Image (cartoon, rainbow, N blue to C red; front, side, top):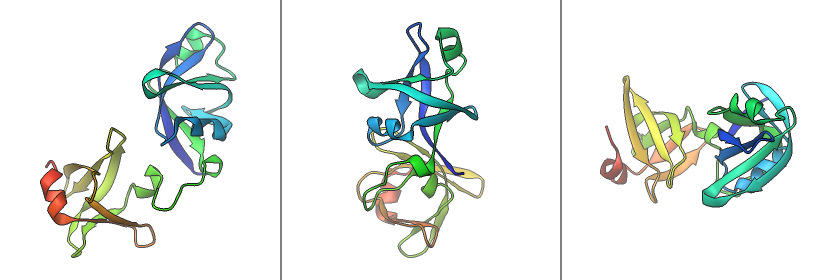
Length: 166
């Protein structure tokens, strides 16, 4: 079964095993729709979820009874089953679907393979070409379209050249 990375454990919160997390979903409350999550390959049932200040969220999990158990999960990625993920609206994609795509210009010039996407205020894509890394923010107009069938990310070359860091 395919899994999506949906967040990251930042630190324990309080003494009852609650976790402060950073969500990687467009809407933090989408985490609740998963029902269960995986951290370090171990399955946990979601007992509680709440949204806090600054875009962070708090997660209570069955099997994480106290602060000591929560501390062991610090810094780990949180995954969910793809089948439990909410449906996306037209033109939206899960990061896992974009990783591995060839980034090409509208003219067909190969720019690199998408190796990583860092969710910041605008997502930062990392391409790899000939062993070198190229980073660029996915700001308006840089990515023209995502073609999952052809496994391509079509890029506006002029805008790419303005924002890319080699």
